Length: 457
Image 1 (cartoon, rainbow, N blue to C red):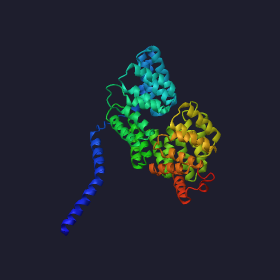
Image 2: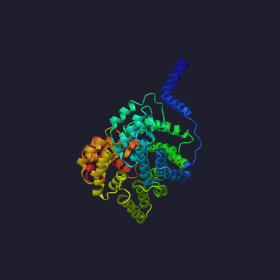
Image 3: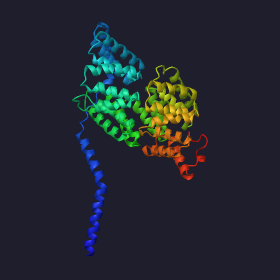
Image 4: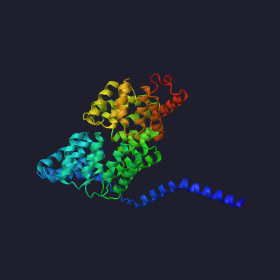
């Protein structure tokens, strides 16, 4: 009888263990099956190395045949691709001019020029103007998913999430899954609280893009970079680092991948790495965000003189390189985080919100208002920014601190805890501030005295 009872207990424990392990086993099996179903990567072609020759070829053709709408359209496409590879805004303007010329020569059924105009205007942050051209493209080829995916991206950037959702729910008839659609949906899901699904979509799109040999190397690298960004948001730092390095292996001049590595090192206080990657990224694309990582690393490494020079460059970006407002959001965030030029930061944040009323514009304005001591006003925008419970630790941190400054202890505790669960090393300073705030709240039973003063900015 004793052996029989022991056997029963062992069987019960084994059954319990199987029940515990079974969900993991199923998820693991599904992951492996999904990976096995992905297409095989094609060899990478360094098309960027011959971009100048290709552009020169079409420029000569355009001079010889000024009334050929096809040549104008192809030249516009090459200018757009060179912008993506070299980050010269002048190429965007050239692409826009050639696409407009092509449309003037053939106003109807010129979907290639419409799509190039859409992409150029999107990169120039002229989102509303871009809608006209993407709508024309949708009318020309209603079965083509590319124009609809581009509209989803535009509506998402403009904060019109209900429109983007409707488009996603009603894809073009007979549409087959593709990397462009997956990329647009991934961005929507990322913003609206579906980070895990966004990661699966972008990884699938990455595999699809990698399978096409004649895809530009920069395009293939972009999907790896986006996968890295989403991994960072999820606190998956090893995958983020892997994806950023993969992007650089495909396209060595990928400034966004270098900036991603700089952010990863910056957030984890690996200052020599942060400085190295940020300096390389800034040489290619001197954005306020990347220059900010560089300046912070220089200060942390005991070189305030170099940090001051880098900050001067950030000021130059605002005065000279930001005439079109492309860097508005990053400038406002940097000024608010460093408590500098706060009146300018407020003006810039309001301008960004007027250009595109998405959750990140609302978050930026909320944080800048807080930096200016206008915490009650900031609360309105923080609530708008977090209405989807977006899985972005910095956004959640901002909302948590703003809630505490408005004496909403429960909301503050919830937001700060959410931020740390998402990504425990999302910021070199804010992550520690969140931990201290939660510890003090626990020790003081959420009393208001634990939250007084400027310590929670």
